[in-house]
Length: 275
Image (cartoon, rainbow, N blue to C red; front, top):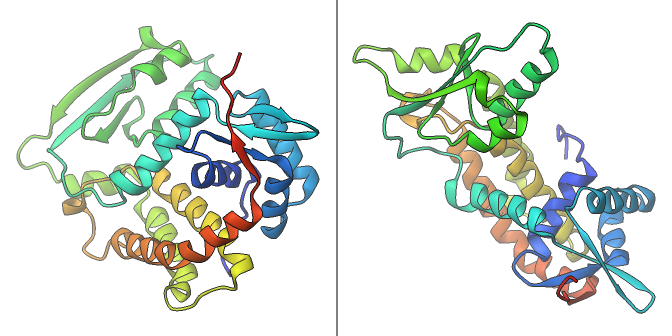
């Protein structure tokens, strides 16, 4: 598909685990993963390296069965995957239920803490915040940042408030000034253009599973970057809703063939309790 961004092996791996392992209490054979990833254009060495790195990061655990090595979820990876599942299927891409509140986060860090300032800004962006001013960031609704701030060791340098804008505040303009709407809109439009042909076409059975994994990986990458701004204050032609419709339609069309392929390709065993 033209215009698509390259897939990071770990992103595809997380999608694969959420698609095939989450909620089933099973482990998957490494050879099965290598086979599926080869169909996605990812070589055996890259796949093995990704599995090893994820074990090292406590995102996977190993389980040996005879001469074969299987991989299962950890508490950490299950939490990550549940969050992604919730973001795709429950939260969705369109925020129609905003209560009018904002979470405000102010911070003041010493000039020498450039790295920590960068880390804080990156994590805030990931959590849906945008910079209203240099040291004051905002996000729609109620966002709990206590864990984020604690992990960075910045509790003494950060203050968090809940607030409503005064009557007369141009919220639409504030949103345009704070977030890069054109970039996010472009991502939704590009996704819809790439995947819309599959609303009416079906792949051959051998490609359906990989296409579904790619579809979910791309979609999650976009919605995770979306701060879920209130749709009533976004441009009338905001492309999130049609893009989400394309995602759901294509996912539904691919699923019967993808499920058939997974039954054929994957070697799964029950997960044993960890010692």
